[in-house]
Amino acid sequence: MIVQRENWGSKLGFILAAAGSAIGLGNIWKFPYIAGENGGAAFIFIYLICIAIIGLPVLIAEILIGRTGNADPVGSFRKLSNSKFWTAVGGMGVMAGFIILSYYAVISGWSLGYIVEAMSGSFNNFVDATDSNAHFGELIGNVWWTVGLQALFMVAVILIVFAGVQKGIERGSKILMPLLLVILLIIMIKGLTLDGADKGLEFLLNPKWEKVTGVTVLMALGHAFFTLSLGMGAMMTYGSYMSKKDSIFTSAVQVIILDTFIALIAGIAIFTAVFAIGQNPAEGPGLIFQTLPVVFAKMPGGYIFGILFFLLLTIAALTSAISLLEVVVSYFVDEKGWARHKAAITFGIVTFLIGLPSALSFNLLGDTKLFGLSFFDIADYLTSNIMLPLGGLLIAIFVGWVWGFDKVLENVKQGAEKLFEQSFWRIQVWKFFLKYLSPVLIFLVLLHSLGLF
Ligand code: TRP
Picture 1 (tube, helix red, strand yellow):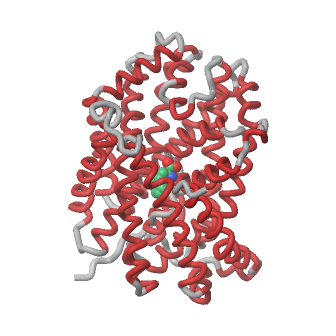
Picture 2: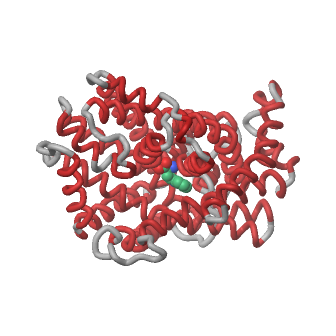
């Protein structure tokens, strides 16, 4: 029996879903604190360059592989390459999807729990960061809280993926993404109108070049990968549901603009408030869960803004998580002939179970360390620092060198005929970046992650 493969209902459907995948904890939780720790505008400047010269070319390459192969990452690579090696690269992507989602759901669960905390008013009497740190420690130290919320979050992810590409992912993105944008804009305007907001803007927008080192550049590169969901086939899978009538170039640029825009306004929203309330901006990963609750406790209207903020963070996490589960589900649907429903439930549960050691890293397994790293840290390091750059490197090499550029051209032009008639140089620039610049720079990131220099 040949079952018609699913696809997006419209071009906007793809863009919102892909932007939903890109915009996640990476934009709202990670970007502001790494920008804050690494020289503010200086970091942002380098990051924007990385997005343009590595992020965009690799994003186009990934979508192209998926759309041309018209299958999950394993199937697409197999069709285009006919080689075991490249098929295995797709397989590594599916594995990475499992692992990333397993720990991503833990933090997402915290975010979900913080909506409830904000609603119950538990931030209200925080006087300073000591109070909120203690509260945060208590919450994540509680096995039932952490694991229960992780499970609840996974249920939401499973339900959306279960409902299918158009009825689940596309419909969900069309509701959630505009909502996310509206909430973020409201919070940013609130931040900008607080007394002392200018100090936050200055912190974020004033470049501190003395903080920039080689490592900063590598961090910016690594983050460009993570924030655009690159290197493991998520964009390939979403690309596989894309119509050949739409332009990959244009869609990729639109997704990137949305992702970057959201990261920047999240940074502005957060730092204006943190400075106006006189909190420490350099709290690193604790910025969101430890510093912000104090900010909400002291800010006029903070009760409502606290709820809105964690709602925003949870929505962003949810639309990213569904893209991760979709990679795994599409593999079992396309390659193993499973029904979508069965695949979504089974692998949603499996991912939850794989994520348990990560969730327990903050409580029961707190003392269990391998090379000084907890399960959570290992899962994060293995994927963000090794599997994603390696995947991205191989994707750039495949499209730049292996596939055959005449075939690449023919496929990337579909849906973009006009664009390329007008300006063929775009393809040449893309080709140059993909063949030379991206592999070399990504290779350096990888060597650095492996501690080789
Ligand atoms: N891009 C998401 C974020 O910024 C995370 C994410 C979703 C992701 N899917 C991915 C990262 C695939 C790497 C690969 O939070």
